[in-house]
Image (cartoon, rainbow, N blue to C red):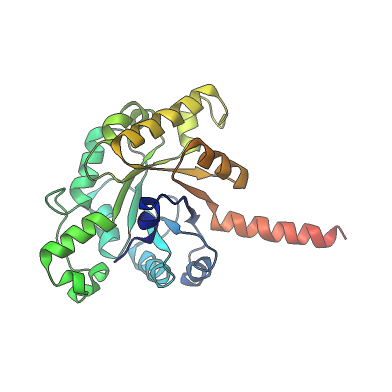
Length: 257
């Protein structure tokens, strides 16, 4: 089990991902040839349950594409099952409080960091991977390679961001700009001073805590701007939006000749 995206960020590289909505293992396999570093399989807004997510994860790992999952809720089952089937990072929406994040760490990290329930799932090769032969080595490797990434998209999370980012077991923060702008009372006003101040506060909190900063970007221009601001990683658009835009450009280009 190697989290290649985390490895790259540890080396100071900027990483790029996308939200996965297309919903087939073939689509994941294709994205593996794109140069992306990771996908975020979306079970919050997407219709996917553990059985299908496991197939997406399997296809991603074959391509050295880090499989992250946005879980649907803050619960032990939502955290545990996705990690057991091989998710290398959990993106967690709707975070409001410090207590919620402490619960996430409790569910998602093995002792001594948390209280994750022990299981040799497919991420451990069902107990047959070399690193799973020793219980201590397995739990240590899981804690290191799997990432807990709360989303900062609510007023509550922003107000508590310094404490949330400093919690042991939190690996980074992903900014949801649309919901965050709504929470701030400035929907979609991404250039507003109030919004930029919020982004700078999040980045400062993460930098002080030694945690990664990730943000969703709608397009290339936004992604470049986010990297220039200092974000470590950008999740750009959704695969289905990129597909539609790509074909739209092709069709318009042909029809305009």
